[in-house]
Amino acid sequence: MDVELLAKEVTSIVKSGCSVKSIAVEPGRYVVADTTVLVTKVVDVKETPEKRFVGVDAGFNTLIRPSFYGSHHHVVVANKFGMPGEITYDVVGPICESGDFIAKDRLLPKVFEGDIIAVYDAGAYGFAMSSQYNSRPRCAEVLVKEGSASIIRERESLEDILRHQRMPSRLMI
Image (cartoon, rainbow, N blue to C red; front, side, top):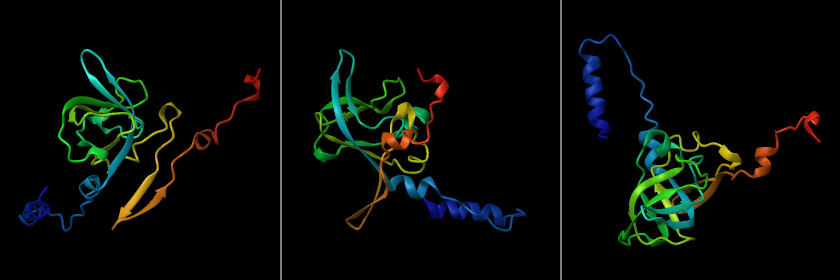
């Protein structure tokens, strides 16, 4: 998006007789989306007569936008960065739901268990829209700046999820 052009167009509309005296813009996704990468590990590679699948340890509970909105996120095999694509895969999560996918029909280098997949543009509501669906803990968040990494949100554990759950004694056998 050309922010300068957008500002000029909005300003010209306001100046051409609109009674609005000021406008505040919250650029949200424009500022954050391109700054965030979801990093996930390949846990399975499966081939059927119709398709090839790369199973990763992040699912739609981690990044729901592809399933929910049909959003397109660029996907690369991070440990094979720069290698040409050879095989078309669907990148899917571990939840076993039809909507549990990160990307469909992506040309990638040959993928193996243990490879690292990077999903670009995962910011702007990625964590805010994540969930503990199927009792899956939410991932950690790491801030990287000028070659230095800091954990800014710890990975949840199953204990974190269960901490506030209570079983009524009347249901105990």
